[in-house]
Image: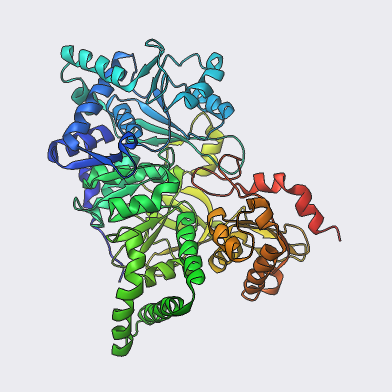
Length: 611
């Protein structure tokens, strides 16, 4: 039976994020709040701060913002990667009664100018000189912007100041107004603007999503009500804080009180897990795909008895999982064999992630069920969830005591999910945005008169209310033969089959057959290259080699054997480069901007159909 949470928490939630934070500081002053790497002392060296220390710093920074003239709901930008300073800056904005405008560090200067201008930011926290330079290019277009606060960039003591300087100004202001932050916190209403997140989107100009204090408070309290986490847990946080997925995990932390280790360097995730030894982490599916591919290719290279033992362990573990899903008992012999193989094989995989992970949370895109089952067989639970920026990230999520692979779980307690026309997923609850900033018509299209958010995603619901996402309504395409195809489903199948794949993009709208573009993962393909007489060659030469083509051809053949005839990929090609955030072909949450790739590769795609 599904796990149901008590919804009485809705009647006594904190009024706003500022109160929620200050309550956490008062209740856990000596408890660890955050830890972060101190790179100047060497890789692997971390420093911790208590809730009391964070509370002191945030109070001074909030007072500093007020001293600079910030007023309720005025916007304060944060243009930075994920780091401890991002978090305290955001909390300071909340405690000053203002609203955070988030800016991805990878955002180009044109969009930075647009976002800061559209949101009318008065103050901006900028990570370094790179971010300061982007802003400077558009200074003439930002009349509302008065002060820049940099984490590690160059200051001038006037328009550009450092974080310490802001805190010092706040300390001076607090000497005259000692209860300033408490008074502001008490004055903030639940429906006051807290955050403007500009959706990176896959089409068009970014839209500012207006999220209120009640949205973030609700998200955190809904997690706490489910008893998924407690103060003894330790989160590892690498997700981009400019994205709602990262922000919602901070909301959960304020409500529950667990400490968080913060480091936004994606290339250090696995290394950090081994050092930090967290009990949970949120991630996009691409992270799990890469980890899965890395382990699979390592074992393939190992070969011999170790590979045989590895295969045997997963074969039996997957058999056990299948029996449990079918509600059947597990034979004693199978359990006994698995107990031995767990120590020899599966426990070592868990150790790669620190050895203490109770579960991962997957969001931002669809996770292939085969990869979820593989991790589950290794004793690593992945709880898939679902949501969008427009509902503060958390809409549905699986529970550790009743998770159903292939689904994204039931609605968070106190909110609703249903299917509309064309099986569109609709969400309603305290987490829904107030609308798009300065875009009333698009707001009306997204939220109907009854308060339902129209997500644009296609789904199904089982009898217990567990949601399965079956595709993106606008992403479905129809071939010239009249057959509908969900490209994301085909793409996910391929990435689960091929451990060397980074991306697999399917096209074929109004065409008579399906084609694909393939990119190979630079890390995974390096090991493969060594074994195929291509070691030391440039990436582009490796992936366009006859050996790589033959290898991918085998996996495409495997894919096609699992598809309906009209879905099969007839032609494909490997690109000589992987997709990146910097190229504009991936969003910062690692989702593919399909339209950008399609436009960039239009001639190549057209050639598939010319003969």
